[in-house]
Image (cartoon, rainbow over all chains, first blue to last red; front, side, top):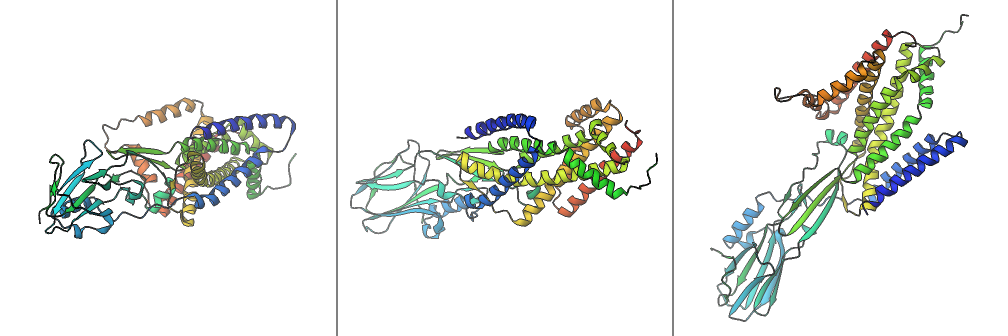
Length: 222
Length: 247
C-alpha cells in the first residue's frame, strides 16, 4: 500500500505535465492559476479533515524510569499492597486443593520476575498478580498496545502465557520545525521504557508446595 | 523626445511588481511541483526508529512537512537567482525604470513568493497526515495545533524562505556582475560544507545554525532574519546599481 500512493502520484504528475504541454498549444488560459487554486483547496480540505482522523496522544506516563525498581523492591519484601494499583494488569484468584503446584511458561527461556509469597493459612486459594510498570514512548503511556502475560490454572499447573512477539508500528506526526522552534516542544527522539518490566506475584496457601525447582523465582522476605 | 509625465516611484514599483507576479507565474507551478515531490519523500516518514525486546518489535515513524519546507527554501533560492538573470531583468525596461525600482519590485515579488511558499509548506503538513492516514494505514498520533502556532509557523517558514531567496538574489547578482562567480560561489559553498572542524570546536556552520535555528524567541528571530535579508538585498541592490544599463 505504501508504494501505491507514490506510484499513483508520479503517474498523475506525468499525465498532468503532458496535458499541460498539449493544452498550451491550443488554450491561452493560465493553467498555473487553476493549479494554485486546486492545490490551495486540497490543502485547506486536508486541514479541515485532519482533526477527524488524528488520534490524540495517550496520557503522559506518571512513573519515572525507576518505577520498576520500586516495584521489584516492594514485591521482594511482600509489600504487594503498596504497589501502585495502576501497575496491576491482571489479578486472579484460583480455588486450589492439590498438595503441589507446577509453574510453567510457554517460553523456553523466561526471564520474568516471579515472586512467591507463602500465606500463613491454608485457605485453598492461589492469588496471582501480573504487574507492568507501563510502556511509554517519549513519555506517553502506550501500555495498552502491548498484550501482557496471562496467568491460567490448568489442573495442577499454573501457566504463564506470553503473547507471541508483537510487531508494533506507531506513527507520530510532528509539528514543523518553524513551530517547534518557538513553542518549546522537543523533536522526537524516541525513547521507550518499560515493555520488559513485568512481574508476577503469587500468594500460595501454606500447605501447597511448588513442585518444579528449576523455575527462576524469589520467595518474598517479610 | 522628452516625456512631460513624471513617474511616481511608488506607482512604478507597484506596476513592476504586479507585472512580475504575472510574468513569473510559472514559478508557482514549480513551487507546487516541488512540494508534491517533497510530500512523496515525507510519506516515507521523516524519521524512523526501532526497538525490540523478547516481547515485541517496535517501529516508530514520525511524519512532518519539514522536507517540504526544505524543498521550498531551495525553490526560493532558485527563483531568486532566476529573476536576476538578464532575460528577466530586461522585462523591467518595458516600464520607466531605474535600478532602485527594479530591485524593490523584485524584493516585493520574492516576499510574496516566500509568503505563498510559507503558507503552502506549513499547510502541506496536514496533507502529509491525511495521506499517511488513508494510504499508509497507520494510526496517527498527533498533538493539536493551536491557531497561534499555525500563524507563527507560517510567518517563520516564510521568513526562512525569504532568507533563502535573499541569498539566491545575492548569488544571482554576483553572477551578473562577473561570470567568474558562477564557478566561485559553488566552490565556496562546497568548501564551506567540508570546512575543517578539527581546528575549531565551534565551526561557522554550527554558529549559523544556532544563530537562526535554535533561537527560541520569535521577536529576536524576526529581527535577525529581517536584518539578514535587509543586508543581503541591500548588498545586491548596491551591486546592481554599479552595473551599467542593460549590462
